[in-house]
Image: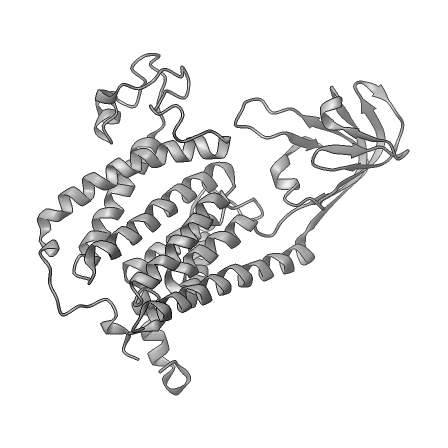
Length: 387
């Protein structure tokens, strides 16, 4: 198979003219403005349509339409709210600029395809989803499955409309062949990474802490609406959502002393679940019924995940767009990007690392030409490679 012809067309529609890059950039900026709404509201469970107008995160005052131009308004107001003068994070400008640049590059690369508009729109949608998922995961360490499920369905539609999209399909011929490769890609991405997650849970799913003498532990209420509850032991805070990823997760504290609402109940094994706790005598108390829960402990077993299920859904979405080859490349490239970030960035080894942004970077690299690396690699295998 000659992969070098996959993204070429004998037809050159007028869309290839550079002038079309300008509306592509402007459309990307407008979509980026909407993505800022998605990034802020979706993790908080808020509607992206109500209220319809954007508002200042601090004073909640609606932003008038004439001050809501992508990128320009942020620069004009010097990154501050017009009403309360509170700083508006650079992320809002960055998301709009990044989306505008991605949309422009996609148009530049794919405007010569047939059918040009359909191909570009599908990949624009993918870019928008990847931008939203990247910033949500980086900030909240979650990937909303509502976005990945929608993206998976759209990806399968893209493969049916443009069968050459999953690269190794080559000249797929018809919509059914393209759809088949998209389905295979989703299965490989979702099931394959899910299997890795389960193996990781078996191997690294518990963190055991032991202390020479009793140390203080407590449950700490969230300070703000965006903050999680914390389990604090020996001064180390651990976010609630980092502990309880599954309904079966249990936090076991071998307590020297247990205090409920300030009253000492003695020692013993305390089992804490996401919404309730089981005292050493077997009594189960809902966490909302307690004012405080703390004490001293000599050991604790804390559940943890090697990787979140959101990453599983994200890789499935990538496979739905690009087939199993895109899955393998995105996973490999994402791992390389993550290692580089850990080496040169502020994220240290041993600390929780949101993997979704790096999978998104791998998928974006694939779109922007990294599939040619796969072609070179497969050709270098000779008879072992795919025909």
